[in-house]
Image (tube, rainbow, N blue to C red; front, top):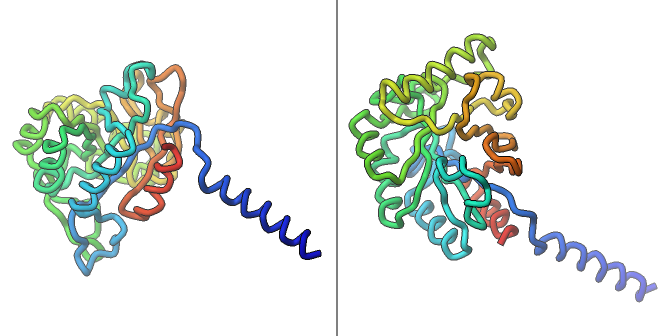
Amino acid sequence: MMYILLSVGLLLAAVLGYLIFRREPAELFVLAYEKIGAAPKQSRLQNQWTTAASFEKMLLWLRAHEFMPVSMEKLQTHTAAWPRKPVLLAFLGGYQSFITEIFPLLQKYKTPAALFLPPALAGTYNAWQNPQQEPWQNLLTIAELKTIQKSGLVSFGAMALEGEDLTQTPLETARYLAGESLFRLGNQLGLKPQGFAFWPAKEFDIKKAVCILPDGFKGIILTPQKGSCQTSKKNPFFRILFPSQNIRLVYYILWKHR
């Protein structure tokens, strides 16, 4: 009896070890960051904040494990031109802390990233959030966006015009907001729109997102759900990870694809 129990235990341990240490198939990861800095005590969204030190640690870890940050423009090329382990560093919201704390690190390590912002709020604040629940933060000004653009390290994408949750609006309104947002990003701010992020629209999958975006849109589409890259014949999918929510789990998931 003892021998049977020992054999079963060893078998279970072997299966568990296999599940923990096995390599996973290649995926295209997006590391999505929202607020940068130390979370204020009154913030009810503590799990959306990431310090610059934590981000720099991630950059070094990615380099050590041969992950290659890429631009949205690179992702719109054929997959044969991608590095072996690409990852997209995506910053959502267009907060001013991006230029003060993240941008210097991107320059230091010559690392590309993607910045998604609501064009109508450039130079204002995150008016889409209730200040009684989350402190308002200043957003990047047009001049700051131009400075970032000149570096060539950052590609730009749009969010809803004023940060609206497009799951809470009628379909025709959502289509207008998405189209107007892309138009203003390019024509008002002078930034080439290379993607669109549906945030905080957590119920959106790629099929719903495509129905709302303008016909013929070829940029990168991000939703919190897994979805196929619309620009690749091989149809890989983006997997969105949030380092600020569970950094240890993110490291583990990435490590599984070593």
